[in-house]
Image 1 (cartoon, rainbow, N blue to C red):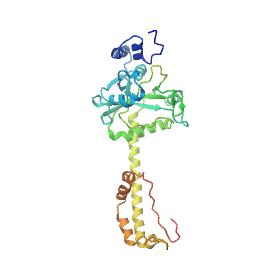
Image 2 (image 1 turned 120 degrees about the horizontal axis):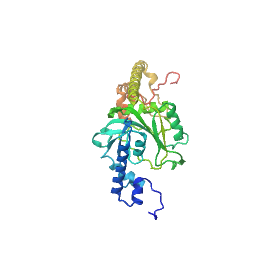
Image 3 (image 1 turned 90 degrees about the vertical axis):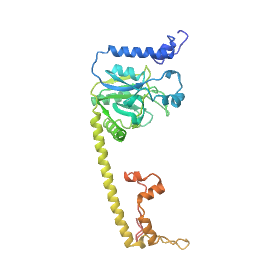
Image 4 (image 1 turned 60 degrees about the vertical axis):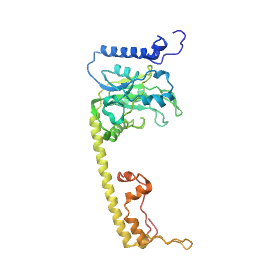
Length: 338
C-alpha cells in the first residue's frame, strides 16, 4: 500500500493496511501464525500459564472509547495458554490482553479467579522521587537469580503527570500454579510487598493490586524487552509466610486492644472514686452546669464501638484492627495536666 505512509502498529494493523484484509481475516491469520509458531517450538519445559484474550479492532479505537466500553466486554472468553519459552511469552504479551490469573469457565471476575500462575509488576514511573530504568530493574533481578521478562508498555516514554520516562512491566514465572480464593487477597498483597521490598523496588512499582480480575494491555510490537536468566520464584512459600505474618500481627493487635480495655476499666474506677476531678466546671459567664456524676456514669456505660458506629459510621472495624488512632482519653487533674 504505497499510499499509506504510517508505520503499522502491530501485525493486525499491518495485515489490514498493507495487505488489505478485513478485521476478522487479519485476526484469524494472526492467530494461525501464532499457533504455527507454538508448534515449531522444541522446548518441552513449561515455564508458566497465562490467561489471554483479545478484542477485534483494538488498534482502531480511541483510549477514551476503550476505557468506557471495551474493558467492560473483556470479561468472557478468557483462555489458558501454556508458555514454553520467553519467545512465546513475548509474542503473547505483545498481541493479547492477558492476566496472571486463571478464571473459572473463562469468566474474568475476582471471585472467579481460581489460580495464580505468575507475578506481574508494573513500573509506571510517574513519581519524580522514584524513577527507575528497565535495565536497573533487570540488574536487580539478575543479582537475585530471578528469571523474568521485562517489556515496555504502550505508554513508555510518553508524558504522564509531567514526566516522560520508561514505563514497563515485569513478568516473573513462579515454581507452581497456586490455588487462590478471595480470602487470600491480603496475603497476596503482603507477599508481593515483601518480595519487592527485598529487591528494593517496592516504592517504584504501581500500587500492589489485590484485584484478582486484573488484566494487562498488550505492549506494542516494537516495544523494547529484556530477558533475565535465573529461576522461577517460590511464590507458594512467600504466600504462606505472608499469611503467618498477618496472623501474628492480628494477634498483636488483639493483645494491644485487650490492654487498652483493661486500662479503660482501671480509668473508669479511678473516675468513680474521684468524680470531681473529671467534672467540667463552667465559668461565671457561661450557663453550663457541667457533667454530673450521673452523666459520667451514663457515658461510661455506653460500649465504645457503639459510639464509633453511631458518630463515626463504619469505624468499629478499624478500632478492632487497631488502626483507629483519632480518639484519646483526657482528664484534668489537680494541676490541670493531662
